[in-house]
Length: 290
Length: 279
Image (cartoon, rainbow over all chains, first blue to last red; front, side, top):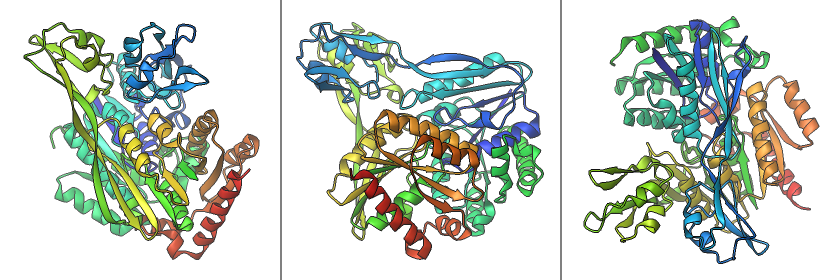
């Protein structure tokens, strides 16, 4: 099984459009959306089967029983996350700030604090010939990295013997991205030819390198700045990072999104360019060591 | 007034709106809370930058004092401590710095040291204070850096513009929680709409007043237009897709300073936001 992860650093460069196109080109039978903060892949992938939905439990959350609370405030001063506030003469836990460490329960002389299970999101799994694993984090919740790991685990358990897995990742370089990189064979970075896009690409490339994972780069909307596209190619060459192609800006990409279809099914210049990027990426994925 | 700019989906134009809004305000503080991928400083090119390091706390174990009781390991709910060869060992990447291990140790064997996770860059562009949070590569948690950036952003200028990270998780909540008003940047695609709905849910839960900026408009996307009408959230302005703006943005140029129509647009947006917040 080879696992390809699509990342970008900067948001909105075209990760999901690229992932949906690759899934179409490869006729992939196993794929996942690890952008649990803002999942969109399900909007452009048609599945035949009905999804199984399960609650995802994150960290527990502290609860203060008001009838036991003596109002001493020890919990509030011990909490490192500023999650306990005095509200109308009583101490209460802000569930959004609470990380479930249990320090408040430990210091409370009245045993007024309990730790309760908390649903931090919903996992969705489509089974059948094509397996698709995705999830939605409940807004404002932490634990996005753990949920990402759960999405990947659900996919590999439901589709243990597929040759290829395509994973749509999230923007940034933090918790969910680090969790998504773990265990993949190759990361495809969809870069954008802007100074912002270049800065963000460098940060995600370094992050992948720190985690010891190979990466290749393509540029989307390349014609928006041919100068910056050139600069990205040169950067890749100078750092021995395979450059797998340019994709032009194409209004058909948003037309495909709004029609709920993969760009693989819409004849247009961006599709043709993506098909070449796909072929190059697959060579790199199968090729092993860089 | 503190104005948070967020979008759910990445790449809809949060930094574009934040930077130009700050320039329209003139005496403003621009705070980049997208600490994983901060870009505002590429546009504002702040001068006289001072840098402070952001630390979180990690435990140290005094092997001479430790009696091997394992209370710290048992207490840690993040599995950040393991008992190896009779002594506790910390895994920094999963430690939440809650301090529980220090509290539960009966022999005072646990102390803490600062572990650098990022930095805050403070500089100025004209009368704009530019505060940039930068998360160190390989660090998982953006929240401590965001918290430090917001603390440094209380400069007493007329308005603070908070450029938020994408998504709808804890880093966004942290960035938005101190704001007085939220500008939601949408783009006319099914992706933009889906993620807009997620952040609308968040700002409503926080009881923050908000308005929508429709960016990169080519053809109107009817479901987005319908959503704006039905949700009752005001559309503050519509920014057409233009090659001029795309080119300026690619070169990290401030549209307000190079494009007459952008200047008008952001002056109008600023007046609109100010009017929305006044009772």
